[in-house]
Length: 120
Image 1 (cartoon, one colour):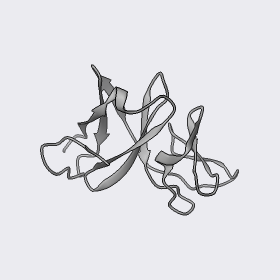
Image 2 (cartoon, rainbow, N blue to C red):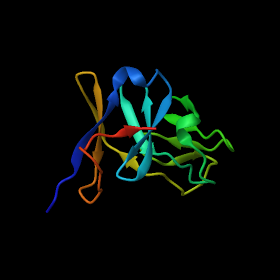
Image 3 (cartoon, rainbow, N blue to C red):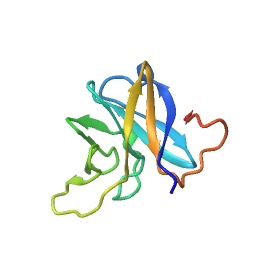
């Protein structure tokens, strides 16, 4: 059984506090956010109409989609607003080593090149 793997993505200082940045990994577009005490990663697509979550406004542990105001939790991927929505986005594990952010990808993900992410 293949285990998930960690991929080096970007320097910690390349993601300003309370902002998100887009990274392409394994053909998927992820949004990585700097919450000050931690970094969180989710798929960069609002479940409502595909808005770019990386461009949204961070509010606590959530981001507000810039297109229609949906509020998505960055730690769980669940939608807080509108209430009652069962939609969600995929979340990815993150960790910091030195001054580098790493993202955990499922074993089945195919990351091209040398295994490093390509910032968009």
